[in-house]
Amino acid sequence: MRDHGASISDNQRHFGPRPYLLSEFPFLGYNYRMTDIQASIGVTQMARAKEIAQKRQQLAKQYNEKLRNITWLKKPFSSNDYIHGYQTYVCLFEPERIDMNNIKHINSKKNDFMEYLQQKIS
Image (cartoon, rainbow, N blue to C red):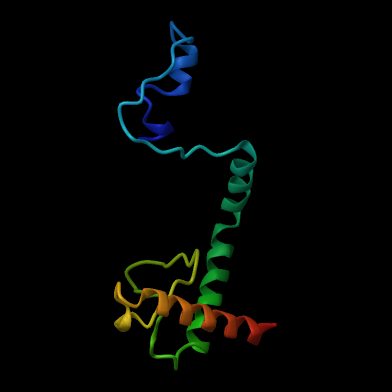
């Protein structure tokens, strides 16, 4: 499915007996390739992965503490069965009130709340 769903990889095509042929794309695929710069940054970050994860968990703990009394905001769930990566701290805004008839209203209120939080840290 990677490389846009091509039937053969670019490597196979370029170094095969007929490198001038274009790949066929029998499946809908994805492009998961990264640049050399992204790869080098990733390799460097892997050396710091534990430190980065611990910092994210520390920040999530602070968010949990600061937002604990806001009952209508569903915070990220964590368990002893896994370690949450906290790539982002995703919350559900008024989850019990969300339906397709009022999603624009909920989004507007969510944006107002985000603006309020932004002003508190500025």
